[in-house]
Image (cartoon, rainbow over all chains, first blue to last red; front, side, top):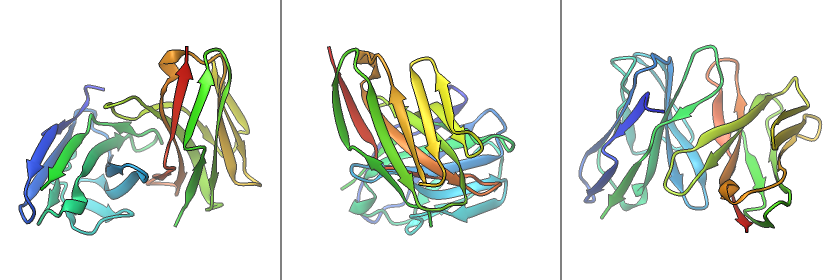
Length: 112
Length: 113
């Protein structure tokens, strides 16, 4: 579990501000994912990446931007935060040849 | 896209009884079905998974069954213990490469001592 970390763990911001959530994994996993978790919705995929410089949209990508310049990092940016983006954000990763996704500890984001 | 329905949303059982959580999926191409357990304030953790070429899989007190024809799969926990209390999520993965997971909305299991 210590192989995938997220920062910050808690963040309070205001509507309209830009926020970046960081995800770092030490396993050299090829795939990385960003989910948001909201009551009544479970976990929903925002974006995923198959390798450095390869990203693709998930179920709920609007309002988010991702990049992956290095295999180990997969930051998620909210360019102009809205109250509806208040949520718990989980990063996950997996090896190329395996299906199991390993989750990070999560970031609780509150947008005022 | 894939749609995963999970029932029930809440489940209370007496310690020692069995618990069953059921999920249905819509995309017949899905071929990977994991179950995650999430304790309060913690990250989801994989507890068991099954692939479409297998009908049942067991790991101690936990078992998962898959019916591809009916497109449903279930989690069975026997001899429940208080530490089994958590939210359980099913998911379905489709695609040979990305295995994007679509999650159910979760079941809050409470085991009453």
